[in-house]
Length: 221
Image 1 (spheres, rainbow, N blue to C red):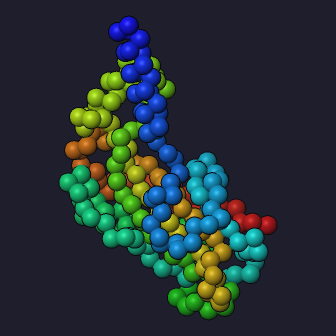
Image 2 (cartoon, helix red, strand yellow):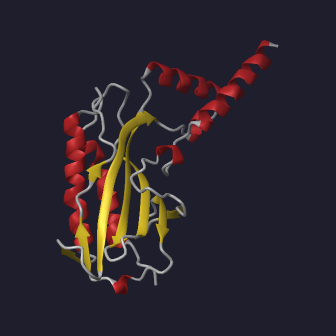
Image 3 (tube, rainbow, N blue to C red):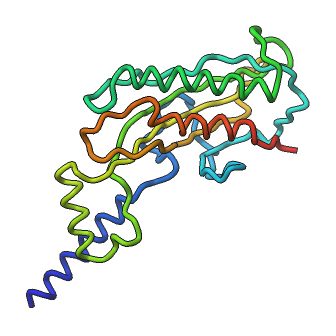
């Protein structure tokens, strides 16, 4: 009887923990409001294999544009530093994002300071920087390991993922309407627990991935 009850408890724990496995795309409850309209977003893979949410206006043609006006990436909403993620870390991520994304876009189209004809306006925002309990690995699905994993999470000793959320769009300067929207979630280096400080260097790989996908993006035909 005790064995049966233990197995039942383990089964319930398994369902709860598996439900908390890491999502690799931004969930709707994480949409910041920066884009205004999130309808039409679909999960796709970038050229490098990263899952993102994307919408492209069916009538969009790159040949109709010659310039990009780059508006610096900002925070939306303004983040509140924590003991684990400091103000310096947040600013470092933002600065690095602008230093990588602007030249990446410049390789695709000539930059301009004016929102004139044949121009796309780039707007982007980092909408979240945080840590979360690491998703379960395949070897943790057995009941005993599930209980151990739960204890580690509850006590703050479980390895944690570092996450950066980004939302961006390209807007036709003549019409004021978006032609491309992207919502993505990226993972930086893991930290060993919920007290280890997160540095900007821990998160740079997320920005590097974004910049690389910008370079590799294949325009619709």
